[in-house]
Length: 196
Image (tube, rainbow, N blue to C red; front, side, top):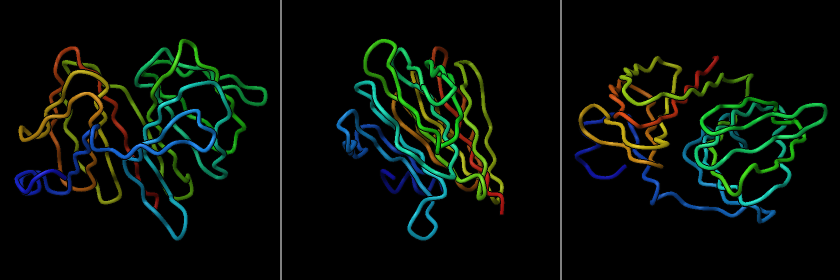
């Protein structure tokens, strides 16, 4: 979280700047991942939010027992092909599928970037939606809720104290956040709710 001023004004809110995120190469060399947040239980995570740069076609990693919601945030999208199923992952359109599904991706028009929410449905639920510019959103966290805002384009103000620009993310796990979204901006809203 950058700066003491932000810590005082935005309690329980984390601002993740795009240029401060650590890029980790995939084992297969077909892209990189930048982790935004996770919640762990023992040696594994119960949910993880990350951004991936996909450079070419290829297989997805398996996450048995997990659900995945993938949203393309830059690029022309891709097809996700599995046994007896083909999913269309287009720009700004969240796609949910079983993490155990054997998926191979085929890019529709060159490299892309996507936001990934992976979660254990026995522990929590997950939802991702696209918000268009000109809207105003008021977030109030319940005891078991975590919210994230990812700025796809343009900008979005946070409690009149900070602004997200393209590629920036806000994580909120307590309190409230009022977010007028600037015209011509697009933002992804992520909601995670613990079940117990």
